[in-house]
Every structure is written in structure tokens, then in C-alpha cells.
Length: 278
Ligand code: SAM
Image (cartoon, rainbow, N blue to C red):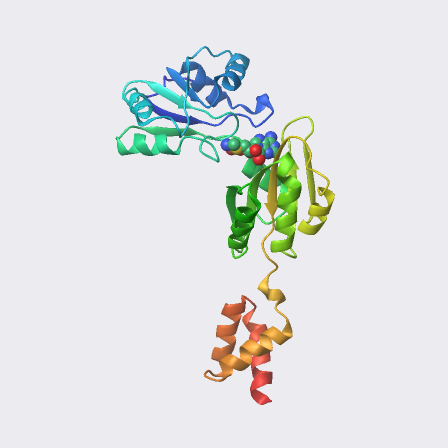
């Protein structure tokens, strides 16, 4: 680091497997910080050793007491305090939200040193649409709550990104396949590690593949968006047009139905003219 960092809270992303993914800026910051807040000192000590950092470590998570947080806030005016998690980007299904919120509320500077996150890495590996996605973190582990959560996600018309553990993968995929029929998916595990693997297919195919138990390691599931309404059948289209024609001209009916079904206006207009004649 060419200049010494200003006091404040630094959110520092760390590798999700391959230690070479540590950015030089992140390493410099951890070496030069006054304190590194971490989830598990043993895990972070390995990373610190790897980069040759001797900065004191302090345990912190979102269950830490208000008193703990107050004492950390007390340092931010004149010290450089780094926040890391066991792996990846802090706050993404990891602790830190309460601290960042409290630091901002108290008027301290908050900086980020961006880097790896399993969610984004898996999304890029999946071959599924990336223009819009919803990150839903870990679904509940109990089946009823998990199925309720999936039913809620079914209405979201984007790719979905979920974190999952090996032992629960089979059960989770079975529920996903049943409640999100016709959708594609990808299962990425051990990203950036020795046994990295991404398997793609329909959710039904993935559920079948992992029915006998999930693989070992850390896993991200990516699910493609629901089939496009552009695939709305002619019967669906005719029904919608007939209804709209009760109150609207063919041109207006076509515009309404094209918007409602997210289909090209030309297709809706051609149909509206046909139906208006009959
Ligand atoms: N904050 C982290 C991040 O930005 O990726 C995620 C922390 S969350 C507690 C841990 C979960 O992330 C794992 O259970 C797994 O679902 C996913 N994960 C982390 N590292 C991974 C990897 N190398 N390959 C696949 N999934 C990973």
C-alpha cells in the first residue's frame, strides 16, 4: 500500500478456496490494519500466516453483544479495523451487517476491498442468465419451511442463487424440481479448489443425479428463470385476446395482452385481428 490507510472499517473479501485469489490490496490492508475482526480465529490465522500478517485477531459475528460492537466502534475514529469472514465476501450470508450499520450510523468511514464470492462465481459458471438474479442465501433446513420458501421464490422471474451443504443437496433439489418445474439449474461445488465441479441440467435431472446423497464440500445451486411467457400457448393468447376485445379495440387489446404475457406486440396484434373478425 503506497499510503497508510485512513481510520475506519474495512470490509475485506478473502479467497473461497484458492489462496492465490487474495488480492494484493486485501493482503496489504490486513498486514497494515490495527485489528482484524473474524468469525473463527483459527481459520483466519491460516490466511494471515499465508500472507505474512501479524495483526491481532478479534472474534466478531452478528451475535456479538452490543457492548462488543460499541467497543469496536470506539476504535474506528483513529484505527484501521478490518472485517473478514471465514471465506469470501463478508456480509454475504456471513456476519457484518450489524457492524456496518452501526458504523455508518455513528458517522465512521466504511470501505470495501471487493473480491471473491461463491454466489457470483457460481452464477458465472452456470451458463444461466446473469442479467437479473436473486440471491436467496441458505434455504431453511426443515422441509416445510424450505418448501414454503421455494413456493415464494417461484414467482420471481429471474435466475436464483442458493447456498447449500452436501448432505442437504439431494432433498433440496427434490423440492426445487417439484416446485419449480421446467427450470434449468447448475450445481457448483468446491469452486477454485482441487475438486471443483459444475454439473448442469434441468432441476429434475439434477435431483435424480444427487438423489442418493450430495457430494462432499461447499455447494452453490443456480436456477434459471421460469420459461419465458413468450412461450405462452396460442390457446392462452386467444383467451387473453378474447377477454381484452370485450372492452378494447384490436390494437389496444394487443398492446395490453402483449404487456400482460410479455410477448411481442406483433404476435398479439395478428391474433387480435383474427379474433376480432371471427
Ligand atoms: N461470504 C461467503 C461468500 O461470499 O461466498 C459465503 C459464506 S456462506 C457461510 C458459505 C457457503 O458459501 C457454503 O456453504 C457454500 O454454499 C458457499 N461456498 C463457499 N465457498 C464455496 C466454494 N469454494 N464452492 C462452492 N460453494 C462455496
